[in-house]
Image (cartoon, rainbow, N blue to C red; front, top):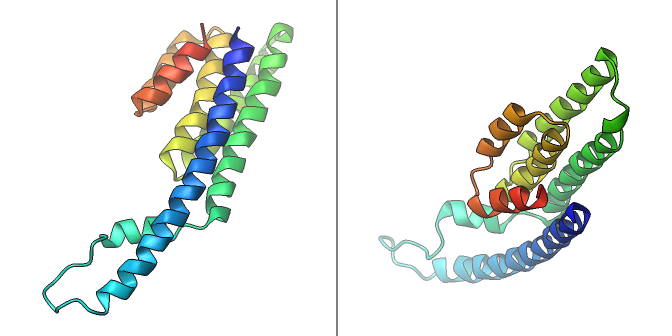
Length: 158
C-alpha cells in the first residue's frame, strides 16, 4: 500500500513540475507584456506585477529542473537506506543510516523552492518513520509548513 502511495506522490511531483513549467511560461508572457506596458505608464503609476513576482517569472526551467533533481537525489538516498533497514544490526550501520538522513536533510533544506524542498523532506520523514525514529519523524514533519504536503507525507506512512 505504501509503495502505491509512493508512486502516486512521485506522479504528483512530476505533474506539479509540468504545471510549474507552464506557469513559468505564462508568467514570462505576462512579464513581457508588463514590460511593454511599463513603457507607456505615467511616472506615478506602478506596473501590474511587483518586482518580486517578475523575478519569479524569470526563473528558468533549468533552475526548476535542478530542484527536481535534488529532490530526486533525496528520494534515492532514502529509498536505498530503507532497503537496508532490516540489516541494521550494529552501531556502525545505525551511524551510516544517520549520515544518510543528515545528508538528505541538508540537500532538502538547500532547495530554495518550498514544494521541492518539503517534498524531499517528506522522503526523510518516511525513512525516519520506517526506521522507528518517532521523535525525529515528528520533528521533521513539523518542518513541512505546507499542510497539503504534510498530509501527503502522513498518508504515505499508513
